Length: 172
Image 1: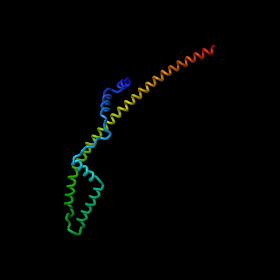
Image 2: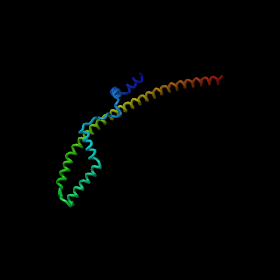
Image 3: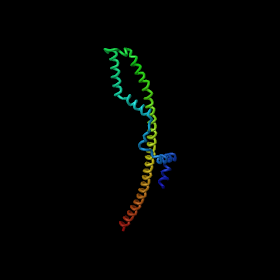
Image 4: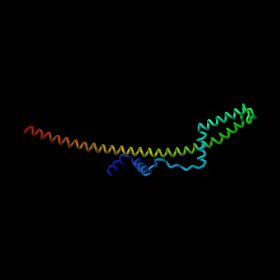
């Protein structure tokens, strides 16, 4: 109990109160998984698919085939040189992909903020706990130094007594 009182004097009241609150809260090791709506899951899937090399390669191959068939093709050209139909399809793809990817990024930003807040609280608690442990170690070290000083004083007194006894015996 005495040590706890000494510790309170070494840590500011605000830090001690914050430490007590953090000790009571006990943040989880892993945050619970959130339930996402169908739109969230779809936007994540679209962003994952469109952000992959597989998608880039498949789209590049399809574009190359489209252009080749319309420029060199033997049969009827359904989308001649300025490729207006291809531009229209790519514009539709971009018009729908951009907002879907933005929704996924916004949701991920919210998740990242929650994770960052959780990490901050864990780090803050760890910092205060380490500071408190350091103070306890310093207190123990101070107690040990006081104990060693008293032992040294006692040993000096014993040595002084022994010296006087030794001197008295030598004189007799």
